Each structure stands twice: as C-alpha cells, then as structure tokens.
Length: 396
Image 1 (tube, helix red, strand yellow):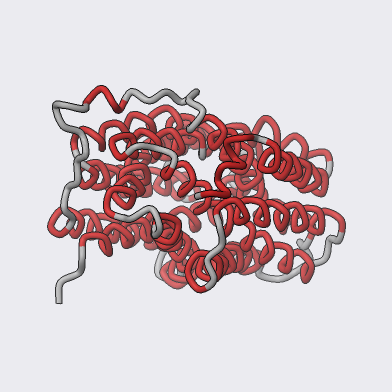
Image 2: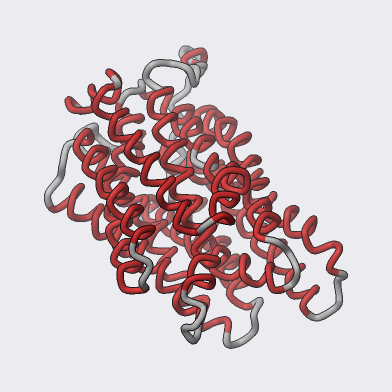
C-alpha cells in the first residue's frame, strides 16, 4: 500500500523536528564549552531566524504561484544541507582541525542555510493543508500537521542520543538522509496544488497590515518570543540551576521531550477528541502559559520545573494550531500561501530578539526571564479579550 502525499508531507515536518530539537539540545552547551558566549550562541539562531523571517513570505507567495509540492521539497533540501553545514565546524574545532576563530562565522553560515531555504517547507505545507481541508476540519488538520513536527522534536533527542553513541556527527547525517527521503516521497506522491490562475494572480497581493492579518501576527510575535526564550535558555537554565545533577544532557533532552509530548497530547484532546472553539483555545492556552512561566520562575526545583514544562506544553498545544487556523480561515483561498508566509516570517521573531531581550534578562537572574514571559502572556490574554479581530474568532 502506497503512502499518501499528505503523509509524506507530515513525515517531512517530522524530520525537520528531529534535527531542530537535537540542535537545540547539543549546540548551545557544546558551543559554550568550545569558547562561545551565551550571546554568541543565541546570535547563531537569531541570524538564521532573521533570514527565515525575511524569506518565509516570499516562499509562501511562491508556493501560491508554483505549487506547494515544489516549494516544500526545496525547503527540505535546504534543511538537510544546513544540518551538515552546522555540525561539521563544531567537531572540526573540537578535534583541532579548524581554528576556534572560524567557529562562530562557520556556525552562522551553517544555520543561515536553514533560514534562507529551509524556511520554504512550513508555509508550503500549511498552505497545502488549507487548500485540501474544509473550514470545519482546518484546526484539526493544522494540529495534526503541527503534531508531526512536534513528534519529531520528541524523537530527536531519543534517536539522536542513540546515534550519538556511534559518532557525534551520525545523528545529523541520518536526519539529513531522512529529509532527502521525505523530499523524494513528496515529489512522487503529493499532488501539486496551485490555486493561482491567470485570472486571479493579483489576489495574492494581500498586505501584512490587513485587519485579517496583522492582529494574528502580533499575537504570533509575542508567543514566539516567549517560546524562543525558553528553548534557547533550557540548556543554560538546567546547567546553572541543577548543575549538581549527573548527566545534564539527559535532563535537557527530557525537558524537550516533556514539552513536545504534552503539546501533542493537548492538541489531540482539544482539537480532536473534545474540540474547542479557536477563541477559547487561544484564551485558555494563554492562561496556562502565564501559570507555567510564573511557577517555573517562583519555585526553582526540578520536579516543579518539569511540571511547569508539561503545563507549558498544554498551553502551546492549544494556542499554536488555533492561531494558524484562525489566520487561515480569515483569508480567501488564493491568499492561503501568502498568509502562511506572513505567519512564517513572524514566528522566528522570538529567535531574532532573544539575544537582545531575553538573554540579557537571563544574565541578571534566570527567574526574571520567566517572570517576563508570564507578563507578556498576560498581555496576550488582554489582547484576545479586547481586540475586535481576535474576538471574532469566537465565530470561527
């Protein structure tokens, strides 16, 4: 029995999740051990995020014109190349083959490839789902697509940890190979949807400042900063607060696993088994984020930290698919790629600003960063309640 095109698309996002989580687990501590500062390490991801933000809208519009399949494949190829280009300089320096002076620019270049080209897969994938799903099933379909990526983030540290025993480079080569397999599967099985015809090409010129776009982008930008500051500080936070524990990489990997598993479980419960309206998904999810960030900052024990991570996963599992779905449902069919591209360009804002906003706060006191995130999420709650566009999601 052949695998459907949409299943290959989910597998593609799964492979991206594999490498993404493992990169966040391994690169920050290893880079710091080799002499890079926290700011430099965060800057590697920030520069890539800037490239991602700059190109995501372009890839979304390009998928409107040239088809979802072609752009999704291109993104997977860029992602596969970026994994190899990112990990190679780290271990060349570790083995004294490459001088430490070249480490930072080499890591920036490796991650930059992912930002410039790897950014194509997500907007093309979500636009494809929007093309092929009904309005009633949009949130569910987006949640399942998102879950494929999150499942990869769970499996990444587990599979990567096993492959790590062979050589340190092995996980990255294997994950790159998986991405190439996904690209071949998408090419052979996915129908290339293309909603733009000669009669409606002008319809793709929707502006980011539109009232059906901008409010969702503001919400996504704040949510991105909260999430990125957490992801980029996990390695440092566990090392700094729980450094007396043995096998810190395992604690870090477990954090990513718990976050991803709870997010997937939340998406299943609230978009599939017992579906909730998008408005309440956004509202209740943001409330959970406030609670978890505040608890993480106020009670600094490993057990409470893990409990907070689980609650945080529930919050992200509710808000992320509801946000993507609400944005999609507010657009016409020919603007799905553009809308997904705009959202994709905003999602990296957190990684872009974390070195300049989050990490300086973390340097003062780790708990201050999570108090800061809880305040931002309170702002999201007020935004959901009082902004007219966000209030309209009650009818979606």
